Length: 639
Image (spheres, rainbow, N blue to C red):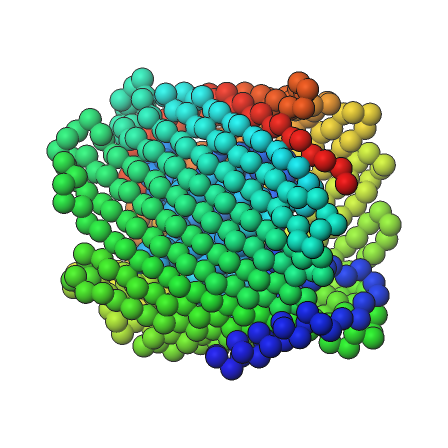
């Protein structure tokens, strides 16, 4: 590993003095290419990029809200402002990797991310990678990956933004941000973003029940600070520092001083990146703090986990003289050191080292795109499997107004057991094996320009994901963790959209449908025999979304609908939540006053007052409203 890092550093130093021959054809800059590895090197897999207009609409929401209405992902929601975890293509919350600027930010003790703590305002770009991407991302990317990233705005000047939301139940949010940059033409150019945000969900419901179901009271305070700084040298080198601090304080049933529960999660994330030519060096530090208490909160249970990580990558253009075939090879290695102290581990300090080496190959011709990747992980006291993947895309039809692409991929995946699964006193099992999976998928993608004003896209995908040695807290043995389950998830996804633009009018619709079958296939006990081939809990078989909008000039009306079929809440399918649909309506407009643009958005959530339930089987709040105000003042100099 040290030899590999040393070689890459040496290559980076040489790159400052050696020019790289220009490639003919469409070639992205080296800095741009290095930022999107999971998207570039996983040909044949479904990738969904969320556009900036959608990010702006959900600016005051959590990532849970945006993905629930924009994708077939299923969420296990414990209540407004409470824990929200994802089920990706029939897998569990532990099988989804969440990447922030290329770094996995899943909490290592739990092996998952609480999506309610990730505000949409916290990042600039969002993409969803479906299927296994472990060969590129590493552990956890079994069902899919969520990619959050920030980026520089190299325009010079200063931009100020102020956002305020007032919502039902005495809930409110405030955001204050700055974007700034120095002019071009200097040796070094600066671009930066500073954002501070706060959210106070008091959840003062005017009712204690909805249709005879209890509505749980809770209070959530969320604070955050983001600082991104980018420095670009005129010869192409770039240095960046990204910081994200979060503090989430949740109190359930705050009025009950005996039974109330408090959960406080705090995270500090720091990432430094150096990019020169086609070499990238990263150094990061992440601290996760988790406190849980009941009653008077005087004796909380505490968890402290630190991660120090480093990554070195070098990308090569193979056969640069062949313009008909662009071939890129990226090799790299990463290292992580974990230190965790948790009351549940018996008071002992747990340390662990993880290393990965990988190679990523991408070949692009006129109609073909092929990727081949391989990764080997090394973990203290574990032996994760070798993880290869192979994918291809072929443009069957390539015309000015019509493109039809066929795609297919196959890849292995793995998941290193969480720290809780291995070290929890009395229940953890240090002898657990890493989970391993095999993901297969194929599909078609269509883009058509029907008229000069009307554009259509469609995407259909079928997949099968087999996951063996699935870790399970076995109730037959006092909930001790064991590698027991074999789960097979299979299904199909269809997404289609129409967009119309003519004489100032804009309209569009995007519809999605997902069929998901996910069931256990191994009988490891008498009880397990009864649940074979039965749908996993909280995974709906059918999921659908429809988003429609119409607008003229700066005004836009949007209707968002999400529907799910029956969700079973027990392994034997004896209990379930009925299927339900949820509809939101947004009306927004922007006006300019001098150098400032003022965006006003009215939002009606759950307009049909549907009855939804949390994981705790409590009713979620009914129809509610919000008014959002966003003021942007930009002072941009044109050089």
